[in-house]
Amino acid sequence: TDISLVQKPEGVAAVGGYVYVLSHPGHCVYRYSCCGGTPDVSNTLRRDSQSGVGNPSGLAIYGDYMWVVVWGPDYAIYGYLLDDAFSGTGDINATRVIPLLTVGNSVINKSPTGLAIDNNNYIYVLDSDDTQFYQYPIPGGPYNGDPVVASNLLLDTAGDPLQNPSGAMFDGTSLWVVDYGTDTMYQYNLTDLFDESGTTTPIFEFPLDPANGNASGV
Image: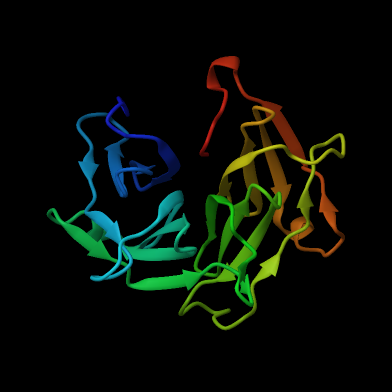
């Protein structure tokens, strides 16, 4: 499948026979059939009828919802009904908004580079500067109202901090992280990440192919 139409892809998700690719400057998502062909293009992503979105940097899909994390000037996770996002042309407003963690006037989770979702329970935002995840309860889910929780710091198997974590996905028990600074994929046990021990090493890691360097999504 040719993804040359996508300008500066910043996130990817594979669901139900489709691959979804987030376009940063386009503020939209391209939907590709796994069998190839011309992609569908979503409506332009907006916060609401009065405001657009800042810099989209991560994508996750579960059930009826497509989630996009955005940094500056707004710092938030926006939820869009998946069917509505690909119905016709024009704009689509978020139906759910989760502000990124802020203390006082300071955004704590200010460098989001990846997004992953745990069924209908939590959304995980990967922060490249903090080299950790922030766990957000999904609105309307079983843990709605719980506080945002920061994970342990991410290390490699040698015990060194990651350099530039840039993409994330959840496989049911583990969070996977790709790091474009080391061109390596890391697998972290979800329970280990949130055991409050301070740091977590991966249970598995492997180097990317040299031609697959500077990866920004997984």
